[in-house]
Amino acid sequence: MSELNEVLPEMGSINHSIIQAKITGLLLNDERFTPAIELSLDISQIDLSQFGLKAKEELKPDVCLYQGRRELSSPDDILKMTEMPLLAIEILSPKQTIDEILAKFKAYFALGVKSCWLITPAIRTITTYSPPLNFKTFAMNDTEVIDEMIDIRLPMQKIFGW
Image 1: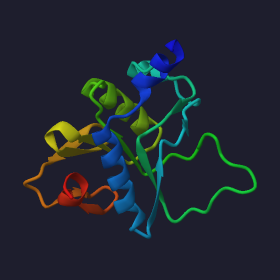
Image 2 (image 1 turned 90 degrees about the horizontal axis):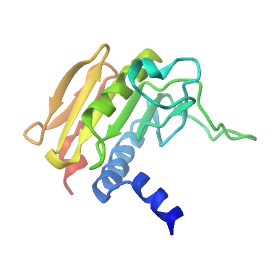
Image 3 (image 1 turned 135 degrees about the horizontal axis):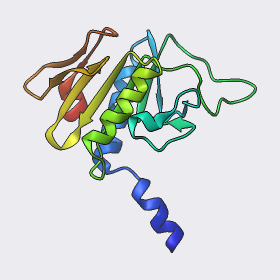
Image 4 (image 1 turned 180 degrees about the horizontal axis):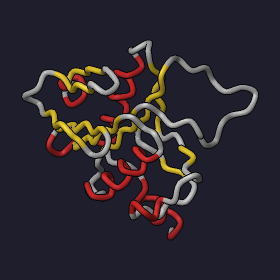
């Protein structure tokens, strides 16, 4: 039973899971990119303690996006990507703080990620960040979330609505 309790805090909420699936589905439709969910990024080349992060070897964005279409890795799978994505997306879960996510964004930018998104399900907003921490927030009164850094436009209603 104690093993189960140790696993439960890491599980995502229903809102987190649904938004993660919707964002990935929308990004799959864009032939210019390949999205990935919970992909381990190799961060061993940088000391994350400077950002207040405890991770030593990897970070896992909820969703990340790579340029171009990617095939499955064959014959061996890749356990940790050394190539950084263009975009890292974090979906705020009920047990996370915005400060934790922003610390991850600083690390992502130091690693070469071009853009980061913070999705806040409770208030239905998406904030796009570009280095160093320039941001723009989109809410339901906006038709689209627009990321000019990587030229992406996604309809807000399809992310947060049905």
